[in-house]
Image (cartoon, rainbow, N blue to C red; front, side, top):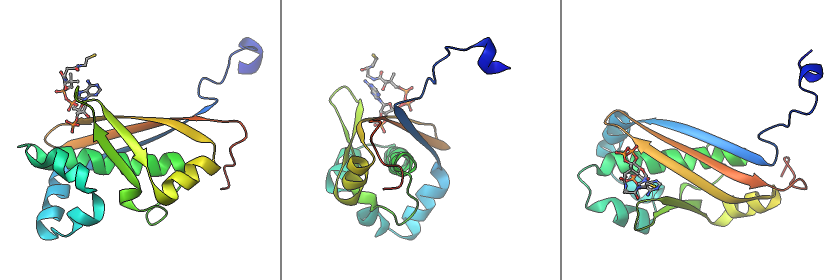
Amino acid sequence: MINDEFPTAPNSVEGYQVGIDAVDCMKFRDSLKRTPRMLNRLFSESELLECAESPRRHLRLAARFGAKEAVWKLLGVGLGGVDFKDVEVKSEKSGKPSVFLHGRALKLADAKGMHDISISLTHTNSVAIAIAIAKKNNDGKDSA
Ligand SMILES: CC(C)(COP(=O)(O)OP(=O)(O)OC[C@H]1O[C@@H](n2cnc3c(N)ncnc32)[C@H](O)[C@@H]1OP(=O)(O)O)[C@@H](O)C(=O)NCCC(=O)NCCS
């Protein structure tokens, strides 16, 4: 039995919560072309500004879209549970992305005892991937 073989093995993810998402960059670009008003519904002014000058704009936005969905998973909500703009990505000068929660996303994270959320992004021409990880207090309520 595994528990007997490794009686003291800790649960390596205890105290943490993760979320991940992958976005098809071509489909994402096509959707934006078809429905440009989506841009302002999905992204904050700062996110749009940060990606504005890039020739890889749609890849960077796809990664940020993925980050929003990764944070939704982390928070345990689906489409409609939290506004897209309630999860906002900002990049440091080094390029390292950080995530900021607003509105209902912030309330949910607080209620669930989640804090110090980190994200990491990557994108190729075809796929963008985002992963989010949060520290979780033991007293956080999963049913929040
Ligand atoms: C980090 C780096 C190596 C990634 O390059 P890459 O493999 O070609 O690119 P990927 O598609 O896998 O990842 C791109 C994403 O990495 C993230 N990223 C960029 N710099 C980062 C950094 N310093 N730390 C963490 N993540 C970083 C960004 O979110 C970026 O996406 P964005 O431009 O849409 O915001 C490259 O961006 C780089 O050299 N950055 C500057 C140097 C640096 O600070 N390196 C950190 C080493 S400790």
